[in-house]
Length: 102
Image 1 (spheres, rainbow, N blue to C red):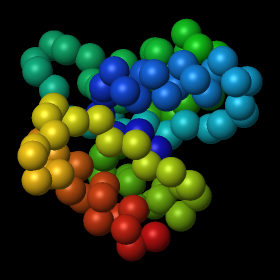
Image 2 (tube, rainbow, N blue to C red; image 1 turned 90 degrees about the horizontal axis):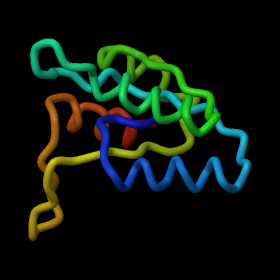
Image 3 (cartoon, rainbow, N blue to C red; image 1 turned 120 degrees about the vertical axis):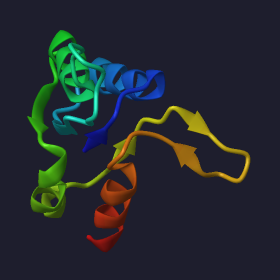
Image 4 (cartoon, rainbow, N blue to C red; image 1 turned 180 degrees about the vertical axis):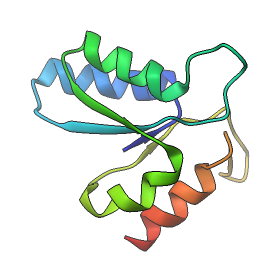
């Protein structure tokens, strides 16, 4: 599962594609987004399509429903803090808690 969008996540997706790995990617919409802009989930899905990777977009509120089937969670972020914390969109903390539970 991918929540948000980052260059690091794109590098991971590119690596998966180059290795020919057959993975099913779930990406959250990762809202909010600026008015009129594409959601981060849509951006991730578009990149997956370019790389011939299977990707589904789910609403942020559906993370808990899909998490039992997830093997790995990748979180993009706006900034990494000196203490190891991250700054990202609303919902990142919830995705982390749900992943930790499962």
